Amino acid sequence: MIAVLVLLLLPAVAGGAFAAPAVDPPAPTPEGAQLSARPGDRLTFTVASYLPGRNGDWVVSEIFLEHGTLRMNDPVITAVATVACDTLPGVYPVERTGPSRPDEPASTAKGDAWVTVKVADVDEAERRVCPWKVAALPPDQPEERWPAGDSWPQSPWDVRTFRGGERVTLTGSDADLVYGDTLTSLGFTNRPVMHGAKGVATAAVIRCDAEPGLYEVHWVGRDEVWARYRVARTDDAARRTCQDEAAKTAKRQAAPWLLGAGTAALAAAGAVIWVLVRRRHNAFR
Image (tube, rainbow, N blue to C red; front, side):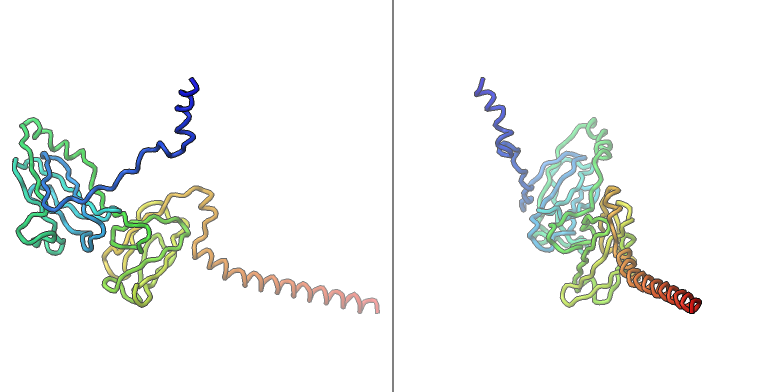
């Protein structure tokens, strides 16, 4: 009986000793691999995140409903693509290409497939229900998850989460932003101006009254989204204690004015008292 109690109590005493092991990140899809699929299946393709220039590449094949897009999903880069319901059985090549060069493979020598997909033969019943199977799939998620230590933004879909009142740094490269460019966003208290020598950077403050949700950052005068971020939901206590840069500036500007007004009021009161004392003194002379 004692032995049974010891065994029951041991996990609680040992803490995390019996906890489930951490899940390993998915392994990169091997070059030249052959994947198996059925019409309507969604396939995931994975590339090592340390390989430069892969984020944003397309994963294309004649069997896909639409191309997949490789997106950072730290610690790997992944893309998803769905096999069309009318795909006939057979083996089909899959290429990885750049979005600006869709006819030029980016993964291997021209004419060689990155991987292949073997599509199974299915009966008419399975093919009839395939459209409903595809409709039930979750939508492709465009948001990317970059390492927390990387500067922001790494791409227009590098979505980080901030809180109201938080001061954040935006960093660009010489290729996209230059000294003096101005950024704007509905969630900012200010219009930050890029500055710096090598990494062009600026700072912005998230408005305390910004509603939770996804926000865009634009160049002033350009019709394109340069970055996106999410404002976190906060409780009432956090909102009451939040002070964005505009409120802090107003408070700093008000403090000298209040001090000066108080000093002037005291001086005026002193003058009135002095006049009254002089009148009283003259009255008794």
